[in-house]
Structures are given as structure tokens and as C-alpha cells.
Length: 381
Ligand SMILES: [Zn+2]
Image (spheres, rainbow, N blue to C red):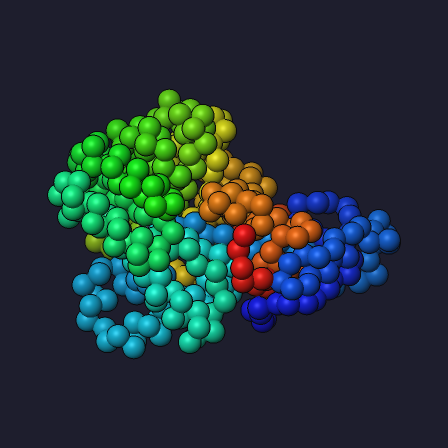
């Protein structure tokens, strides 16, 4: 399989994932789809069905952590710098191999590191960053926050990440307690927006979901304890919801790749149990849902497609899950007019499969059916 930065290529008689019974001739020029026309012999059966190919927009993972090499940050500090960098480059490579052509790194990856790895390790993964995250240690008033937001924006980040509640590290009875005051929270959002930077909010639920909607953030992450009324507010305000559902199932398994202690496994299991309800509220309210994995260790990078299976398990159809990972994800990033669809003039980030990806059994079968991953034009607009 080859992951290529593609300038020109054409496909004959190829299926577009999600459009049944029609084949297309597709030409890519200058890294964009320059022509997409229905094939003349579109309806006829192929003589060799084993050679049928499907094209889909590249998958967009809206919540990954490519810079982290260990579940516990202290373990990363024991590694030497070059080892960390090589592991980060491997994370880029594994992610792209899974058909993910664009990511939004949800914290930890500095824009300069992303650029360095792209250039020196020749990794064409498209990366949006939020750099350093704002968390409990930053609840020190508006002056401090003003300085922090400025620093993060100057580092080149295009998003600001707010850790608004606890997570797996917090006991269940305090996990929804807000990290910041309401005033601090709103200040971060307005400072970010004033600088043209978008905001994503880590919240498991509670009052910070209301604050996020009120302040006009672009997306909330995890949200497993959101209420039905909050889902309605998210839908109305067009605030995106990125559930990152699979990571909690993985973390809940004491024998799984993360092998966490029983207390953390128990917290993860509660979160995993709550997610289907939140996702069903969001689905019925019509919330814009995006695909994100929250994968953050070498054992997880590259298995990104597993999130599709979990979203389906939580009540989305395969088509809805696919939409969350392509078209809707591109919209959430702010590039819905150039990325995330197989359409003329759109950037030719794509995955070629040798089986219909929307009829795939599971993530493993889907991954096995990838023939190649294509990265199109560099410029996003
Ligand atoms: Zn995360």
C-alpha cells in the first residue's frame, strides 16, 4: 500500500462509497478532483468483480493525541527526545495507514512539532493543532488566561482546547465539577474567537455543556453525561459533538491494551455505559456529530476505524458514522467547502477500497480492504 501526495491520477469505473449501482470516471489534477463523470458502462456488471474499487473521502479524526507516547505523561518524560520524536512519526504513519488523512490533534502536539514531523519524516498527514491545553492549573484569573491564550495562538495553533471538567483521573462524584469559573470559561472562548481561533471543550457533562453552548464554542468532546435538553441546545446552536466513544470501552477492559488499574477501569466502564444514551439524544435532536478517537498511545494509533464500530453500536447507522468521519468532520473543521466529499474541485484526500466500505463487517475488515490512501493538494481553502 502506498500513501502518496498525489498530483495527477485517474480512476475508471470506480464506485463512490455511498452511491449504489453507479460507477464513475474520476480524474485528479493538482491534488484536486478535476472531473467526476458517470462511466458510460456504469450499469453493466464488471467481468471481474474481484477488481472492483470504491473511493471515499479520507477519514477525518477530530480528536487524537499524536504527541503522546504513554498513557501516563510521567512515562513519556523518561524517554529521550529522539525516541519520542520517532514514536510520534510512527503515530502519524499508522494514522494515515488507517485511511485517516486529516486529524485535529486535541492537545499536546505543538504546531512546530507537527510541521517538523511532516517535513523531516515525510508524513503527509494533514494536522490541525491546539498545542498546549488550558486546564485546572490555568484557573488563575483573566490576566493569566489572556497571556496563555496569546501564547497558544502565537505557537501557531488553530484551536484552543479547554479541559472544562475532570476525566478518567477524577472520582465519579466530582468528575462533572467545572475546572474554571463561568467568567473564566467565557473569557477564554471570547479571547480565542477574537483572535480567529476555534474552541473545543473537553466536558463529560453538567453545567459546562450549557456554558459551552452559551459561549458559542465550535465543539464539545466526550459529553457522555449530557442530558436530552442539552442535546437540543447543541442542535439548535449548531455546536458539534465529538463523542470519542470507543476509548472508554478500551480503557474499561483491564486486559486491554491500556491495562489500567481497576479504579480507572471502573470509571471508564461507567463512562462507556453512559455514551449510547448521550449519542441517542444527540441523534434524535439532530446534533452535528463528528468522528474522533482520543487515541493517544502507540498501541492505539492506527486502529482509528474502530470508533466507527462503536458509533454504530451506540445507534448510528454505518452511513451516519461514515458521514461523521468525512463530510461533517470537514464542516466542523471549517473546511466543508473543500474537504470531506468526492466532488469536483474538492481536495483529493481519499481512500481506495477493494470492497464496499459501507457494507464492511467491522473495522478490521474495513482496514484490510484499504488499497491505498491518497493525500491531495496541500493548500486548504
Ligand atoms: Zn483527548
